[in-house]
Length: 228
Image (cartoon, rainbow, N blue to C red; front, side, top):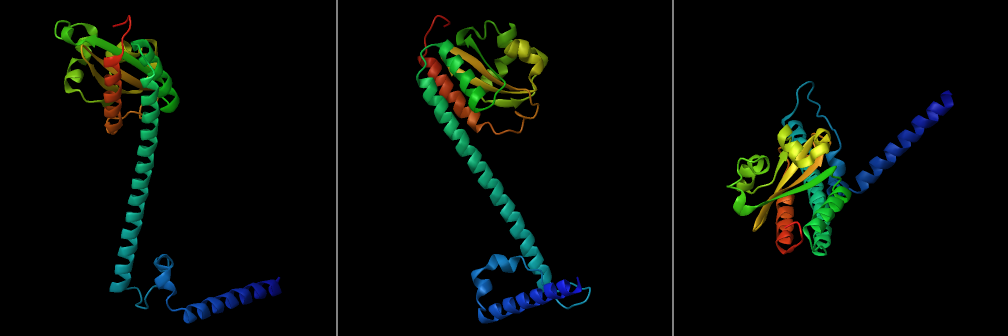
C-alpha cells in the first residue's frame, strides 16, 4: 500500500514538473488561454492581508461571472423567442387555411394546446357597436375596460371572469392570458388558460401575445360563417 502511495506521489510530481517545464517553454500560454488564467487562484504572500492586486483580480472575476450569467440569460431568452417565432409562424400558416369562425377557433385550440401546452383555449366575440348598449350585461361588462385598453395581460382571474370564459374548466384554471381581438364589426377576447397558477403571471412579457392578437384579429376580419 505504501509503495502505491509513493508511486502516486511520484506520478503527481512528474506531472507537475512536466507542466512547469511546458509553461516555462511557452510563456505565452496564458495569453492564448486567458480562461485558464482566470480560473487560477494565486494568493499573494501578504499574510492575512489581501493585496490590492488580489482584490482587483477577485473583483474582475466576480464581474466576469456576472457577465457570463447575464450572457447565458440573454442567450436563453433569444432561444425562447426564436422558438415562439417559429410556433407563431406555424400557427399563422394554419390560420390562413381556415374560412369560418368555427375553423379559426378549432385551429387556435389545436395549435395552442399542442404547440404552447395550453390547458384551455376559448374565444368570446361581441358586436362592436353593441358593446356600449350592452355594457351592463355579464360578458361586455366584464371585459369592457380590457377591450378599451386593447392590450394583452396575464394573471389570475376572478371567479366571474373564469366562469364566463372557461365554463366547466374554470375551477381547474390557475392562471390565464387574455388577448383582445379587434375585427370590425366584432370585438372579443381570446383566453388561454393553464392549470399552473404561475404559467401566466402578471410580470410575463406580452409581446408575443400582442403579435398573436394582430394575427387572429386580421384572420377574423376575413372569416365568414353562420356564427357571425
